[in-house]
Image (cartoon, rainbow, N blue to C red; front, side, top):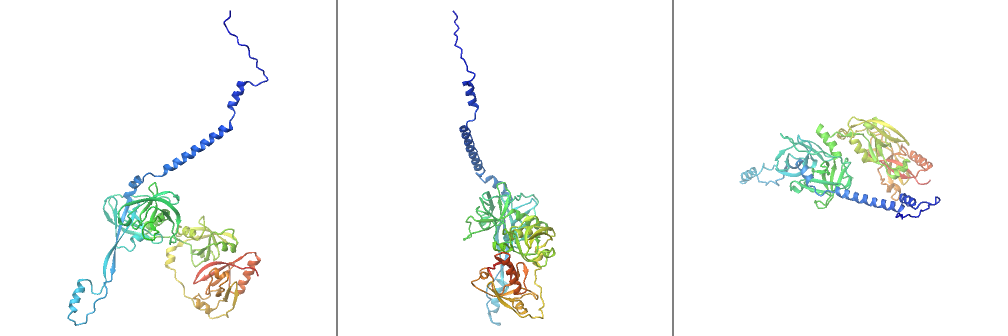
Amino acid sequence: MDATRHHPSKVIDPTKESPVKAQAQSATRPNPKLIATFFVALATFVLAFASFAQAQTRPTSFADLAEQVSPSVVNITTATVVSQDTGPTPMVPEGSPFEDFFRDFLDRNGEGNQPRSRRSSALGSGFVISEDGYIVTNNHVIEGADEVVIEFYGNRGELEATVIGTDPNTDIALLKVDTDEPLPYVNFGDSDAIRVGDWVMAMGNPLGQGFSISAGIISARGRELQGTYDDFLQTDAAINRGNSGGPLFNMQGDVVGVNTAILSPNGGSIGIGFAMASNVVTKVVDQLQEFGETRRGWLGVRIQDVTEDVAEAMGLEEARGALVTDVPEGPAMEAGMESGDLILSFAGEDVANTRELVRIVGNSGVGETVRVVIMRDGQTQTLRVVLGRREDALASDESDETTPDDVVPEATEKTVLGLTLSEMTEELRGELGLDAGAEGLVVVDVDASSEAAAKGLAAGDVITEAGQERLTTIADLEERIEATRDGGRQSLLLLVRRGGDPRFVALPVGEE
């Protein structure tokens, strides 16, 4: 008997799908729920990893950084001879028996009634930028000092420093010490690359306590205090008196700022300190090192920001650029620039406002030829300007004397747009201290309830242009008002001079 068990044959209907095949196909078919679950898990993992990586960028200690840069940071002590009033000298009648006594007494304690002098000292900070002994600090740390002594970190001794040059505009000074050994130094970093929220470390000599560090973050950028070329980084790293001139480091050990000022109601740190940005400092230091002074570019114009109402009066789509209010003799005049031109671009950089233009011009080289894009009468054009030197222009800024005219025209007065105006006369020129030949309409009175008063116009102002066209008569102004209304504009742009200083004012013309 056959022991082999025979299983009945299984008949497969070719018209029906095999269960095995069906299971295989279902196993390879994408499952939407599984895919969604996978991507949610992946996203959660990526976010967790990013958070972990971000947490890892936060320094657990500044010790390594402090050890790395400390040898290049210095304390600065200055000494100044200050005259001191000795007070009133006793008056002794000539021939008095006490005359010789008082003379001997005064000779022992000073030179008669001559003021005595004493030495005053001050403390600050600085940092070495080259192995041959160049040191950067604040100008106010060494200003007026007769002696500047540098104390190096780690009891490495003291050296007397020489002042190479100073720049009061940015409050930067460059010093030099002579040494036989190469000094440890630090490099400048890119202050434009640092962001609000980045970690920084300040180092210096706060309150005369010696070498000290503090840490914090960049709280804000582009702060402006008082100077024309200000570009301060704001930090909450503790900065106190004595920190002035010290370095502000990024986490790579590069100097991104020079600690300069604090905002404080009591003289102590409240977490608002300011460091001059390194990209400003490096340009100043390079010029001081090469020339012993700064040499900034000079365009030779007076400018003002474009406000929304001024933009509307000029028919501009947006308020941007620097509006030229006056063009005295200088590089801009030689290039053909005129009052009323709107500077849009300088040396390939867009000009957002007057501060931006001042910065770009100041950073340009003396004698450099630059392209300046302006808008005039609604059309853009390019001027080529050969820059002068700002320091020379300021030194020679003197007013010229003029000779009065012989002809005295009859004055004409009229009230327009809330302004009582008079056409120019020689008598008015004399009263206002204007040059002979000065033209325009003199504001005699202003309606206190008018828009003109709200815009700050006052008696004694001189309106020299309306709609960027010169005015000599009141009829000229009335024509410009009518043209403005006919053109569908709401405001008329006036060029107003007060005490020689020009500014543009957009004045609503209303309806006739």
